[in-house]
Length: 60
Image (cartoon, rainbow, N blue to C red; front, top):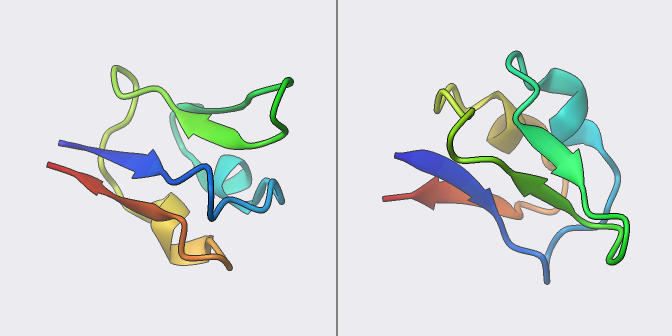
C-alpha cells in the first residue's frame, strides 16, 4: 500500500514533499501538482498529516 495525491485537491504547496523521509514526492512541472512514487513510498503517513487540502489518501 502506498499513498496517493488527488491532483484536483492538491494546491501545489509542497508541504508533503518537505516532510517525506524517502524523497518519494515530486512536482509535476506541467501541472504544478505533486505526485507520489509508489515504488519509493514507505507508507509512513507523514505527507497526509501535513497536507492542508486533505489531498492525500492511502491507495489500497
